[in-house]
Length: 320
Image 1: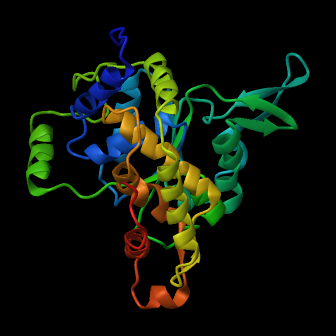
Image 2: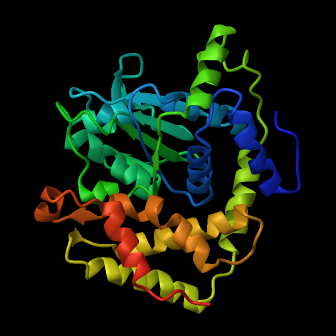
């Protein structure tokens, strides 16, 4: 069990070091997951196979002492395989609800773009409303609840790209990059010394925070002050993306509120009770880039969403 603490920021700050017992590097990914948890958001993890996406989620759940489940998304996966379904009970002669894997605290939706849109959409209600409706009856999901979905950025054969409506549901996108040379040496060295990714207890991972610490952090983040001029700065960023010729889809009002939420969480994790324009600038790319859509002609010219967003950001005066 995690040690009791009166400071949720200190407790959550210990997660980074604890996860590092199993996952080498990927500090920005851990921070992104913590930000999403603090804002009741969801995370899209993108990286080539073998970059520890699954291991990261398992280690996070262990460090936070919360439940987690994994669903391997495949072309034949049905919505009921995720949300649950009604099963006939011969003993009672009645239909009973069998909960699906979505009834957990941290759901790893592995390779979400390998399942058809109908099954992808089965997560929309869970992500937006924190409930699932089966046979007309809504069923609440446990708290905390977060979806961490993974996808491979280089393999597109046999995949179903996520539609804009679903991408917009993900608070933040985290890129799981290949490790630096020194990090890769440490990874291989750990395995040479007997590290077993399936046995986190042997790696020494312990709960260092709790769901109560997380809830206290959520409430603290909501009280982080943001000045009117910084709110206006966020709105100006959103409006600039809508006027950018290279984009067919700019930031929605939901995207603007997401940027507000992630900036608040970053400020709180940084030890402040107020948001600065630099907080907003730090969180723009991971919070917004995946929500934008390039025009076909811009894609053909090799334009990248990240560079378009950076240009839009540079065109806006930064409030003092």
